[in-house]
Length: 215
Image (tube, rainbow, N blue to C red):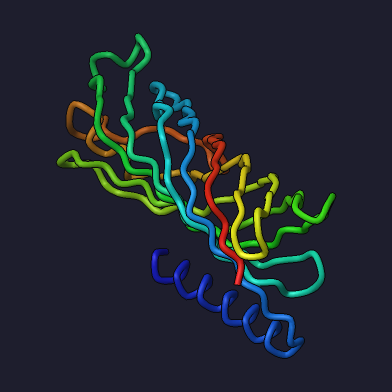
């Protein structure tokens, strides 16, 4: 999954760069950002897994492919804590668990822009990619999952080269049956697995802001 995701992202970026060069309208933006991310929770048949809210950090790089439309790659990281609490009928089979979790998003997509003045531009779009969750607990597996992001925001340019970027996103990592990330929660034996319906999701979101540099 990890290798397929990286190859997919590189391929899309290569196609976007080729298109821009052919049009002769190359214009790039880079935006380092910081913000606040909502952790979200996931309900299993046996209990609830919850990711705590926290600060996140990231960077965006985009390229103009046609007027008012950009292809953008974004990366963000939230280092936080998570917990699992079994429901009452499963207290003998599953332990309470707390641990440190890193939530990484790698997303690429298209967003449209709507200039409202010489300095202010609104934007919004959809992106696809992957989320990588890692936990520093023995017996717990890291996991890659397909992810979708929907975002909107605004850019305010102080000069032709420098401005600020403000935005909000809805993030949806897709979880499927057989999630090994939670293997260390059970008390042992076959009871360590958790039941999760195919297509279940954990909803997250964030608000971010930072500088934007145009080239």
